Amino acid sequence: MSVWNSPRRGASAPPKVTVPSLLERKRCSAKISAVTAYDFPSARLADDAGVDVVLVGDSLAMTMLGHESTLAVTMDEMLVFTRAVRRGLRRALLVADMPFGSYQASDAAGVENAVRFIKESGAEAVKLEGARVSLVERLVEAEIPVMGHLGLTPQAVNRMGGYKVQAKTHEAIARLREEAQRLARAGCFAIVLEGIPREVAGELTAELDVPTIGIGAGPGCDGQILVWHDLLGLGQSAPAKFVRHYLRGGELMGAALEHYVADVRAGVFPADAESYHLPAEKPAVVEELAASVA
Ligand code: KIV
Image 1 (cartoon, rainbow, N blue to C red):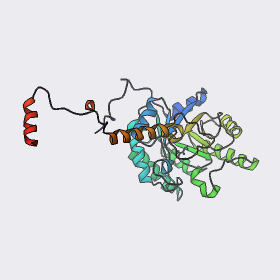
Image 2 (cartoon, protein in one colour; image 1 turned 45 degrees about the vertical axis):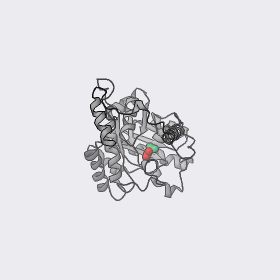
Image 3 (cartoon, rainbow, N blue to C red; image 1 turned 60 degrees about the vertical axis):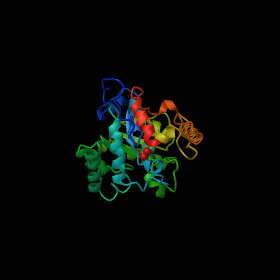
């Protein structure tokens, strides 16, 4: 038993973040905040804090399932996490990340799997990596909003030879610019720019009509996204240069758990105030109980 699924604070629902409202944010230069989340309580905290976009990222393969890359996570696993996040959101836009293998074989497979996210998990949009222009066109035609993702695309880790900053040469910058323009023309409502020089991200942001959401792409993007575990300091290894820890979550949680273990071992948890008692007004019950034990 737990009291987690209790009614939300405040009676009235805040205005919902939608795909058109994000485009409007770009038009009036209002920054967009985004974060990944993978479960109900995290989604609820992010929503209550005013986060605009919650992404169920395939980074959960690493952060939640302990894999070494994002490649192993499956559609069925992504659906379980996305459903949990759905239950925690009221205001934020819910975007589900298409996992590796769910759209690479064909556009038809991509549409089929994106439809699953919408129908089976309540996602409002999907995200996919790379310049998959024809797939984006088909998804938009099928009324499924798509977020693009360019630059350091983790599903291409084997081609890139590791997680390396991208778009550092004239040629690579030109290619990235062309890919971003093509994705925007194909109908992406936003594009994540990951692991690229801030100057390049700033130029792309100025050129594109759709919002850019940066991660390791500097402050010039229309919005920012961080992985939940990075933002809250829950990671196991040294953070990347672009990460800011807003909490030393891992340290605090570790200390709390050590405290709990010590209290249990010392017999000081639970205390009397944390224990149930027989009703004081029925001492006969206590006597019966005492007699049955004797
Ligand atoms: O999977 C993920 O968390 C992502 C973000 C880093 C953009 O794709």
